[in-house]
Amino acid sequence: MKKQIINALAFAVILGGGSACDTSWGKEQTPEAVKEKLTELFPAVENAEWDDEQGNYEAEFEISGRERTAVFTAGGELIMLTEEIEEQYLPEQVLHVLQEQYASHKIEEAHRIQQNGESSYSIELEKDDDEFILNFSESGKLLGQQQEAAVANTASDRTILVNSISRQSIDKEATETQWELPTELREVSSIAMLQGEIIACVQDEEGAVYLYNLKTKAVDRKIEFAGPGDYEGISVVGNTAYVLRSDGAIYEIANFKSDSRKVTLHKSNLADTQDTEGLAYDKANNRLLIACKGFDKSLGDNKAIYAFSLADKKMTAQPVVKISLAQEQLTAKSKKGNKYAFLQPSSIEKHPVTGEIYLLDAENHLILIINEQGQVHKLANLDKKQLPQPEGLTFSNKGEMYIASEGSKKGKGVIIKYPEGL
Image 1 (cartoon, helix red, strand yellow):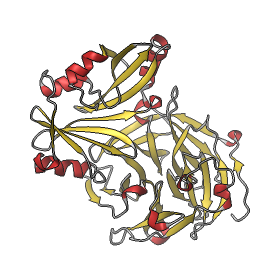
Image 2: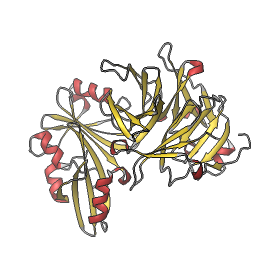
Image 3: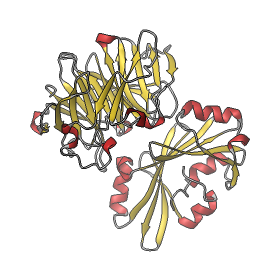
Image 4: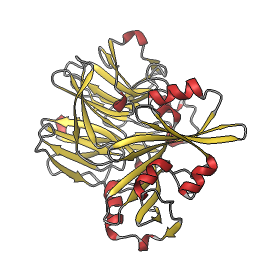
């Protein structure tokens, strides 16, 4: 049932229990307030498909290859956001129910629905000729089951929403401490070390900074700064937090711990294909460094690092560092056929003692050091079982290294401490 599920339970709340209308609308028929809100939340989206849903407006689009659907009121208020997700990103409680009660069924699709400040999940299961949908709350409570035909009828088939340095490996025994993260940080995407053994965290979908206490192993506070989005990087400079969105836009959150914090959005000037994921404070140059997981064909066989000046709050039009993808260290053992896949940075950081630039690569399970000319000096493999999807990197003032990973199918997100870097 590819692209044919809207969670009927969530949809009924939005539309007052009626069935969805299947009228297709062009962008020109969509109210300006609605189009402006979509652009504000997802500025990288250019070709959304619009539909009228009984007075509300539904936009279908993709970000980083993932299908999404957003439903707005005529006044531009976002009332529901759905995203197709991989099985591994389902809450642990939901996975437990599936494994205990539906182990013989195949998961065809899974969707997360964000509505009224809460998340729910819709999962399509299949076994032989039997297909049905299970709806779960975020806590793992089964809300209901629907046969495929019933879902189609209820939702009218609408979409649910370095130089000769060889590779080495970081020894698992080198880890000093490990923390399991709570459910809300299962999809942790970036971390930044603060004073008092507090780590600031952001996760993929929510416009909030979580302050995780390493001593108590719990979240001390959640600081909201924006609505749903694709948030990939965080850096803290004094009392100001900077959060990177995947399109390169940066949220500046002045006095971020204060109730009177001020949020400023700095728009991106990068190509949509750049897919930014890493943000680091470069104290020596009074700037932020922005690492791109994606690519820009105009740069040839290079990946780029850009800078955002903290003096004039402007992003450089040209890269400050170019990393050649032809370097032997990147190509020697890569199994990727696409040259742009040889290196896909998920995080960037400057070592507080040595000043070296560190890059984390979740797709290739690598951590590496480069110089300001983009040459790879050191490179190491990361253990996939220990760090299934390493997304965040930060250092203490002493140079102790912390790596955060999203959770695996059965596990939670984690932060692992290493006594030193490479």
